[in-house]
Image 1 (cartoon, rainbow, N blue to C red):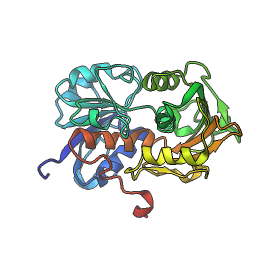
Image 2 (cartoon, rainbow, N blue to C red; image 1 turned 135 degrees about the vertical axis):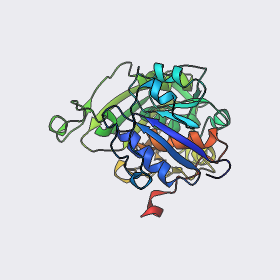
Image 3 (tube, rainbow, N blue to C red; image 1 turned 90 degrees about the vertical axis):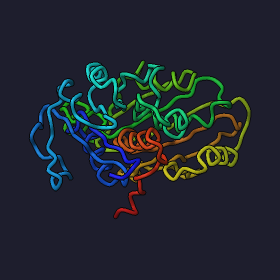
Length: 316
């Protein structure tokens, strides 16, 4: 490895997000996968890493603490991170669960908006997938909002994880969308906490594998126009290659799959100039989890946020 490069270990590496992280680390110019831990796959070859002889190791916290890595990503269920955090107290940790999103001693990893706090960070809490999309859409509007905005979200069933459940069973999901947890969803609480104001959120799951679309409806304090809002968003994300502002064109979830960033569009203003709508799409496994984790690790180790995240069409 070259000076300044960093190694990463993953705990919970058999799930959808863990596999995406392995792929992203494999193509990263300055990162190397040190280990991948999984209770169910211990001893089996790690995808993409067979040529390096890398196999999954056990996921016991004590064993993981003995392995060498500059940073460890915890891709484990909510409520399961405590023993790992204690065992890895001298190692940089990035937590993909919701366990530390409400803990002020951890840096909240909304990459484009918390950039400076992430530089050199040792404890990073990755935002939730829905929470990422909603906040990217609402952040530029914060000084203009009147009342409580509402976000209607639809996610692909990969968001329910790899363990079988009614929310990832295509036989149950059928040809429609299924609402769930319509009051006090953990992402509603997360969004409201980090924006500093109440936001209502209605989550749904649909029978496509990956991607999220959220439609924001809000009321503003003063009249505006679609052109002024588009300028506002372009000014909010001027240097990001990952956040693309489409203006009035509505982003489609079908077009965001395998993309590392987000698209913001469908920017619409009602006849009174104060009722507005904005649409944001992301890939829930990438910008909603793995590629944002890479952005946060890049910043933590002193690199540009988007290093290693080449636009997907450039890879084809």
